[in-house]
Image 1 (cartoon, helix red, strand yellow):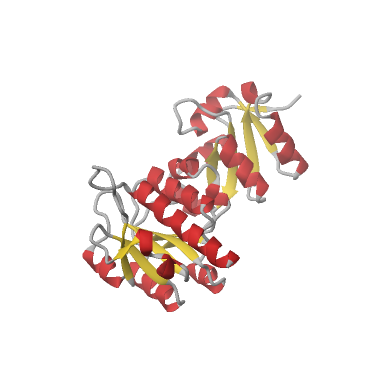
Image 2 (tube, rainbow, N blue to C red):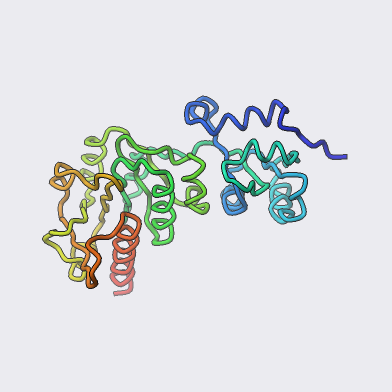
Amino acid sequence: MTEILSERSSRVVSYAKLHRAAERREQGRFLAEGANSVSSALAVDRAEVVLVADEDQLRHQGITAAAEAAGVPVLVISARAASKLAETSTPPGIFAVCPLLDVPLEAVLADEPRLLAIAVEPREPGNAGTLIRCADAMGADAVVLLGDAVDPHNGKCVRASAGSVFTVPVVRQRALTEGLDAIAGAGISLLATAADGEVNLDHAAEVLSGRVGWLFGNEAHGLSADIQAAADHRVSIPIRGRAESLNVAAAAAICLYESARVHNAVGRG
């Protein structure tokens, strides 16, 4: 009979500590919650252990079968243990313990990326996760989190990414100025969105046809004047209705989509 680990199990207690950033750094791993995240972790061989709630085994049998086929241990846990590991109000009943995903900026730049999504001091994990998901969908080569940024291994960020933290490289570069200098020094044009930008996105094909890094500010403060001044171009998104502005997630989706469209058109040309 399969042992069912309780909320008092030493392993469950250790994994529950991964909700804290300091503990994630100490252990060198994080907790992925939910079917999307666990499936994505397994797909790229990034799951060390899978945990499934006893009452949810049938619902997640496809995922646990994939884990077992890949040689990843599957542990069965009690409902109370699942609640202890979950950060959502309704526990999804499946989790994976994964090694940290940080990728050095130097490694990303060495691959000569064509499209980067660069978040400048993002603080809200849901927004960071949404940006990572969007960047992945648009074929960006990496996401760079610059400065005093949220931990991409934060549970809310991982869930908001819908598994994309496992499929697009994510860089954390705490030294903001040095990070921008390194990206620019690698031959990547830095683009900042601005309502009064000198380049209109509708007419930015020439700019977007090269290697670019889009700079996105946080929700509270946007991009500072210094960061905008460091950009090679300031790009405005045409707003044809009555809305005064777009939030960061919407602006990022539009800008990354347009970059991907131009790159694809250039590639076919």
